Image (cartoon, rainbow, N blue to C red):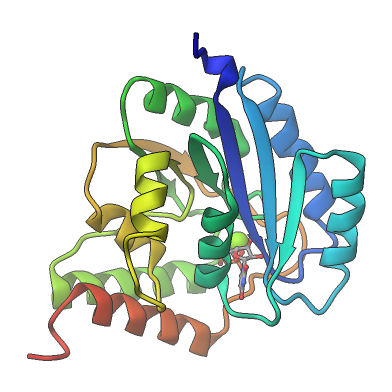
Amino acid sequence: METHESKLLSVVIPAHNEAPGIANTLDTIKETLATCSMEWEIIVVDDGSRDKTFARLNELARADARIKSIRLSRNFGKEAALLAGLRTAKGDAVVTIDSDLQHPPQLIPAMIDAWRKGAKVVDAEKRSREKDGAFTRLRAKLFYSLLSKLGGINLQNSSDFKLLDRVVVDAITRDLAESQRFYRGLSDWVGYSHETIPFDVESRIKGEGKWTFWGLIHLATTAIVSFTSAPLR
Ligand code: UDP
Ligand code: MG
């Protein structure tokens, strides 16, 4: 008989220049996973880091076979790292989470509960962003209001912290051919039953935020071109 315990949870983590904090992040996530009564694997995607992230990951993977690291050949950006992780994940359910503990791993058990009750996508939604700087908050506000004005899609407060059922992972990784991705939009667009869990954005544990101005402009362009016909009109 298949039980909860025989199901596999994959945790996918994109990481770019996160050497100082990555071990602590994985420890914190492992503490939570120990309470989830599921088998698990952690897949960290090193997105072309120039620091010692990959070396640290290899040490951690040697010490625990459930930790896997993959490395992109250069810095492709978070969207590409997430996709590579989703393609590698073998889980019946997959959680995507940032590597800087701004997404609290303590939410994962509640996400699993919602999934066990039938949700195919569990979206962790930002309740407060007090710990994000004023500039980051303003930037996010502009980004989402542009998206909603141009395309009528409301992703305000959405995040990349999600749990996806296997059917949704397959729909996103196998059935869609886009090379430029906007994960938050796609996981909404594919449909299926969604459940939302609010969370408070934590402070970054170590290092700096990795977004450059042009990186964000690129993401916003991908989001707008993928999800709205406004540019055509
Ligand atoms: N990240 C990545 N590639 C990049 C930039 C960021 O994989 O080119 C990862 C980063 O290591 C972190 C997550 O994406 O795990 C979110 O990045 P960050 O904390 O810089 O962004 P913010 O919290 O401001 O959204
Ligand atoms: Mg962050």
